[in-house]
Length: 353
Picture 1 (tube, rainbow, N blue to C red):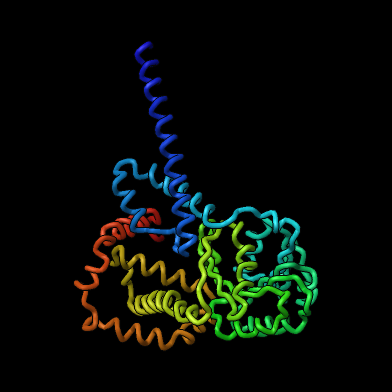
Picture 2 (spheres, rainbow, N blue to C red; picture 1 turned 45 degrees about the horizontal axis):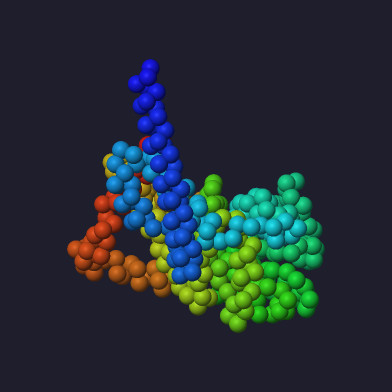
């Protein structure tokens, strides 16, 4: 028994050293988070994370949890998590569709939430009978309706706003070119900006998810008020100029949606082809079906708005236009890590029934 006791004492010493080193690691991560915030750099660095996991070898699972903990602390250091300024405020959400519902549940953890929707009524939150009642009764107004209806609602809110109203108004639509100019019709006392959550309604955990803030030209300071609403929620906040937002979204949303839907259309026209598909086939097949979770009108709107970008993408996707060797050289340091991550994701998903 004496030998076991001595060995356990040695283990206790090692545990203390591990805890001390882990604490030091997390603090260094927080410093990095602060530096990233100053430079507006994303907290996520897939290449770096994969290298750490590869070095961990058989302790990979443990280090995966350590990385997750560090990222949570890093995100906290990048934004103030103090929600005291929200405790006596009310968030009014116009539109209780899938995204409206998701964000209503999320914000209700920090403040009172109320709704207005022409169709979806719920007992979970107070529901106003009109947009004007919601505007008068709330401090923050979020427009979470389909993209094509947002400009009209912003215009309606601007018409009822008067100087002295201390509120913040913002939308979460996918494209901004038709709405941003209308925000200039609000009086200076109403703070305005546009917001784009970079996640879907199927997200179960929103901590660390990206939210892009798009300031209104000439009213850039207003965006900080809107930002302060999202900061305590644990989102990773990014900022982009209005002139660049839609151009970027046509690529980061339009192109993946085109790939997924086109692939699904192809396999739907070929009998039993899925029986013979491997890993890459399975991944694209699942992704294509997941895209169809969005409303057909939404997908068609994305394709319509992104038409020139998608045509350019297809033109440059011809095999004769792609130098695979040159492309590989540009991503040489990440290929192995991403390949391993890809296969782990498929393994975790299991076989499709």
